[in-house]
Length: 198
Image 1 (tube, rainbow, N blue to C red):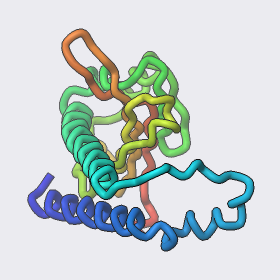
Image 2: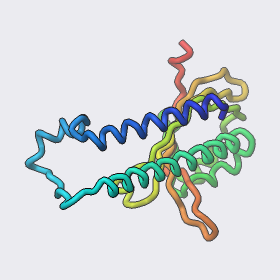
Image 3: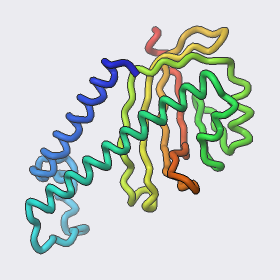
Image 4: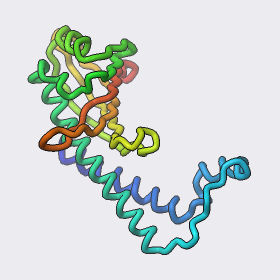
């Protein structure tokens, strides 16, 4: 990732934090609040007895730490993923869960054996990442499993083919190993963006 891309990534992350802080401080400004006003009688969460500014600050710092950790993990993972894809493709399936799903330009591939066959038939590649974005997925949506959504886009050239713009989305999930915790791909969606060439 170039210095420009890192700076842009940092600027995007800081803007995300500022926006979250604004909506946290001004909850009535969010579109979710306006949408939920009509359903207020149906679902009303219990109001906490007392909220101190220090507890809000702690929540904000904890969330910021969580986002920072997710972004760091995503950046490291993406560097490993695309280097492996370009130079050591046989090892690529180690980055996927056993029951992982890949959707490649609308074609579904599920399971490690099918993924291995699919990656072997692809021509050699050269990926260039132009954009990386990530965010942690709320634990209620993933049954308390640490999960990160990662979005990349860039340019890829497969041997014997023209250069393509692409977009790729990953759902990474944390997996405990005897020595550490590693991120594995649960879901991967790759799509050429050929309309950008027109």
